[in-house]
Image (cartoon, rainbow, N blue to C red; front, side, top):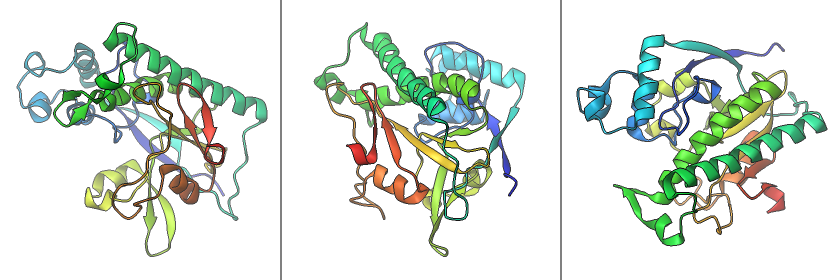
Length: 278
């Protein structure tokens, strides 16, 4: 069956440490984006709406965000085309990547996660890794340093990885896609960005959002990855356990495996590990 296509709006990646051209890492305003930065991605130039102040100079956001917002507002909205992910099934069995290509993809994933860990720590802690005490300190209201650093590291790793995957498997990957269980059919479904924008926050409860999915030539999901940045770095990387909601007591990895029909991989600065290898 011919693969279906969906349009993804390209928006700038706010709050990044490095200045570079807009690329495929900037496709989405994901769930890990800070509220102000997410608003500016969706509405570049609308400072009053997003920050409550009439101008960039009074907004309090970083210079990098201001520069990217200006570029996005001036350049208009670009459009990229990507495969729409299809969940593995008996009828649509995905074709795995060749061994050497898979090795390159996973090496790129690990390299980008390690680089993000190092660069963000260097930027905020002068070349040192934050201590356990620093990780638990408040960075801003409702957000610890561990949470804030995790956001920044995800942004940097995604930017790096997009450049690598664009060369290795162009148009066969997607960052932070959202999936929802259809209670009528009992099957998981991909929520296209335009559908996700129309669904209320309550309607998104119980959905899953892996960091990265890789697809075969027909869009069937064959690999699922989540990036983890333990703080402090001496902590082991692990799948988060749902503390509330319909999946309480389950782990992210278990749910990804059940929903997307492939073993999810956890990528941390120290290693890449599968669900069954933990």
